[in-house]
Length: 68
Image (cartoon, rainbow, N blue to C red):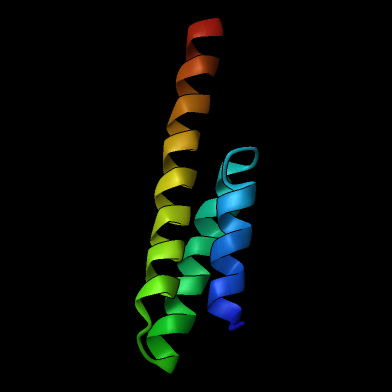
């Protein structure tokens, strides 16, 4: 298993609880994949990690703003 795929899977797993980590891992995974070549599954995993991290970040921000 490649490092880009591993970062995508970890980013998906962590992205819900720690959104910043999901975003960072998604970006790093995409940059690694651009250097080595294209495999659609890796790009999809890292893009989903990035989207879920950003979505969770917005969800956390809206919840905190409603409480505060």
